[in-house]
Length: 120
Length: 254
Ligand code: SF4
Ligand code: SF4
Image 1: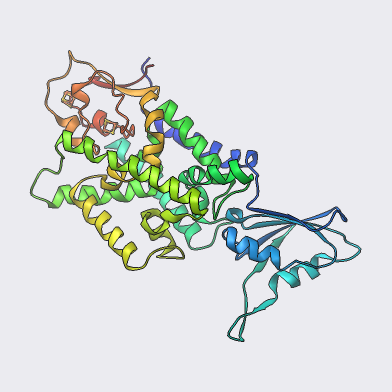
Image 2: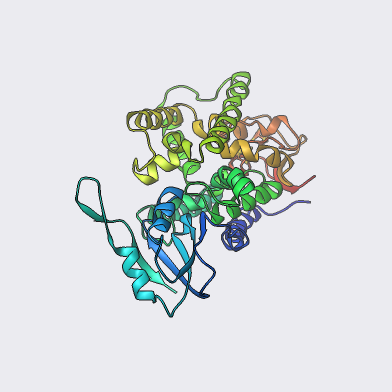
């Protein structure tokens, strides 16, 4: 069956869009840590600085021992971190402060590694 | 020529979007769109249920989309959407204009050299799965160029790799795509099965060779009835260059 030449660009563009929207079917995380079972409020942050498994692990470790944080799941390629937390113990602004706190380096200086650009 | 204008327009938009992402304006990294990232993430997903290094959901979904596209329209992704394919083609065209010799490669040598991409694919996946790191970054022109020699590139080694690819593309059209692209190697079997392909009509063909000369992958459409060749990107250059009306057409054929 003969088909018009323009089928190729049309189908290519359709498949690119399909690929873009199909991403919701593959939402496995880069890292996933559960600290406790308490709290079920959800917060999704877009975090500049979370780029790969290494930075995602580092990011998650900043919340070790922080009261009120139940779990953190990151998807590095989307720069996304999803928190479940207990709102009676910690609020969104406190989470942002922890994300954006400067980190002490070995040489004594400190540097901010992460910036929260969006919270939902 | 009209098809090329359309193709280059689409590719220019995609190249522009990639640069936009690479400059940090988009919501996600430019790497997130690379279908090969889906291949690199497979082992991590299988073993731990987690993505490795910087790969993510979009890499996976783009890989599936590209495979489905290959089953429908062969390597249309390479000819109509890949920014590296686009840059390679532009450099190759410049080479063809400037160089005094014919840049087509001896067919036997050409198909032997293409084996390199399968070796590259196996090695890349082996080391990526072993280390959990995207070890290909330092050798990957897509990453080297759009990250601006960013994290994970290998300094002088990456410079040398890029220079070799640029010079190679200048001398042999689609140099990287032909011999090194691991994504190309991944979709080869699906491309062979691609439904929509170029079909040539022996009765109308005058054996002028224009189609062969215009094909960036050195495929000779006049020598086959159905172009099942794994490397055909359905770029349609051959149809546009053929002087005989309806000698080369696009058909759905199993
Ligand atoms: S055979 Fe035709 S459509 Fe296929 S790659 Fe060559 S020029 Fe493009
Ligand atoms: S360009 Fe057309 S007529 Fe010339 S060799 Fe190719 S298929 Fe035949």
